Image: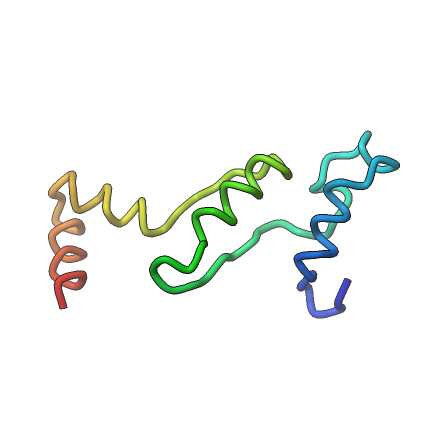
Length: 87
């Protein structure tokens, strides 16, 4: 574990899969409180997040999905988001 609050993905997966720590949730096995996945369109963010949900039991919250949902609802915020997305 780095002392800056980050953790290498390989180290994270080892913590999640370590059988000697299976009695603890992954949250207790690591210092993580949130994982931020950033990448361009088609870079594999969704696939990575699906794997993290399956292997680590994390809750996945996609900002892109939330923004698109807001646009679909047609709220004032959704209309503003839509205009930005069209630029």
